[in-house]
View 1 (spheres, rainbow, N blue to C red):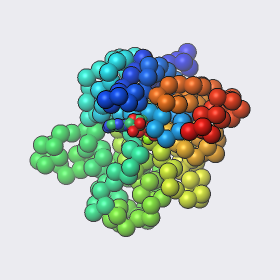
View 2 (cartoon, rainbow, N blue to C red):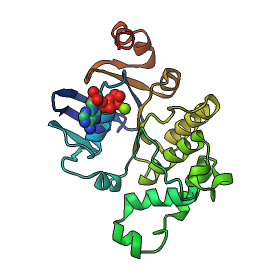
View 3 (cartoon, rainbow, N blue to C red):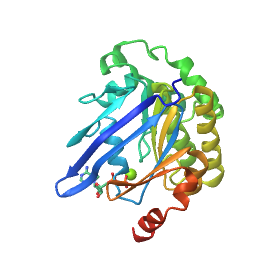
Length: 250
Ligand code: ADP
Ligand code: MG
C-alpha cells in the first residue's frame, strides 16, 4: 500500500541570509493525502522553507525530493510542471484581469513559456480546467469581474484556486487565511478539505490562525528560529509546552 508514499521529502535544508540563519537543518516528509500544517512565530523561517522547496530560493545545504526525485536546481516553473502549486503570503492575483483570466494565466505559468503565451492559442486549452476550479470554489458569479474589484477574502480564494492549476498533486499554501473574515475562513477550509478528499491531494499549509490549522490539518510541524521544535497531531501540538513557550516568548 502506498499509504506512506512520500510526496515531498525535505532533507537537512539550511538557508542563511548573511548572518541570519533563517532555516537550520530542517528535515521532514509529507505523505500522500496529508494536510500538513507548518506553524511557528513570525520570522521562524516558514516562507523561506517554502521558497527553498519550490526553487525560488537556493538552500545553502540540503536537498528536496518530490515523488522521491531530487528537485535540486529545478526552477519554480519546472516544479509547476511536475504538478507542484503554491500560493504566496502576499496576494498574487492580477487586479486588472478577470477572475477567469487570472486562473487561466496561472495555468499558463505552469504549462507554457512566455513565447507560447504570446503566440499560442489564447487559453492553451486551459479554459475547461479553469471553469471547473471556478465552479469548485463557487466563484461563478465573479467569473468576469476584475480581480481587483473583489473583496480581500474573495481575492484570497481566487489566489488559492490559481495554485490548483498546477494539478492536484502537491499544493503549498502560505497563509491562505491571512486577513480573511470568519465566514470566508470556514468556506476556504471546507473547500480545501473537500478538494483534498476528492483528489487525494497533498497540502502543506502555513497559517497563523490556530483554529484553522488545528481543524484542517492532520499533522503539524512547528518551526521556531529556523528549527523544528515539535511535530505531531493537532492535539499533541496544542498541549506541547515548548510550542506554547515559543509563541509566548516570540
Ligand atoms: P516566516 O515566514 O516564518 O515569518 P521568513 O521565512 O519570512 O519567516 O523569515 C525568516 C527569517 O529570514 C527572518 O529573520 C527574515 O527577516 C529573514 N529573511 C527572509 N527572507 C529574507 C531575504 N530575502 N533577505 C534577508 N533576510 C530574509
Ligand atoms: Mg511567512
